[in-house]
Image 1 (spheres, helix red, strand yellow):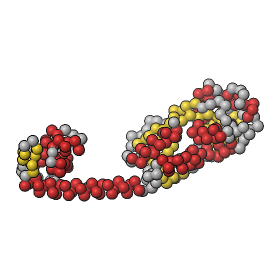
Image 2: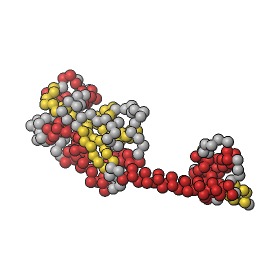
Image 3: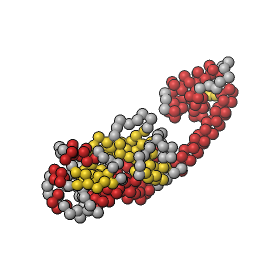
Length: 292
């Protein structure tokens, strides 16, 4: 006879039936039919060459061999449950490191951080800002929040949060604000437009959606990072192009205006993670509610 251990599923079925003294209740606990439990136990008896249960009226009664195996399996599974619970608890207590572009972190996430901490107090969040290209596969982060285009890589779990919408914004302090706010978008042909080197496609993408000739747009002052671009727009230095998410608070406060609205791109804001983690799922649900 093989010296290998019996299949774990068979041992689980036996342990549950022995502990609950019922094949039906064991099936309920393990979310399988009582017939599946009976088949697992029969296979276990055949492999061990002994009977583990005797019929006892409408129920079952452990044989001497069954009692011996019950004691060992009950102790072993209880220890396994305890160790697994400890591991889950350690994972929950470990800081959850979220990678995030610096502009998104500063303009959208941090203003909502207090509410997040109140509503998800068990999530010990540690924020990791980046001004460069983020790598969601990096071992130093548990999840990454960023704008990106599908399709998503098969080796990542990606939670889509909200479609990306972009549009021109300017400050009421901008010298041409009153004039621009009253005319159609093609008036931007005459404006030197603020732009960011990290998202060179933004203005052409918006122009195409509006039926404008992107080659007629004039590039004005450039900025390396989106955060500085939006600070320049808020300071009245010109018209910038921005994701609606990053300027939502500025629009509500009147620091910026968006006379021509926003258009959807092919991308979306998404939460990326390398592995399944219930904390990522809870964070994704919270982010969706904030972005709705």
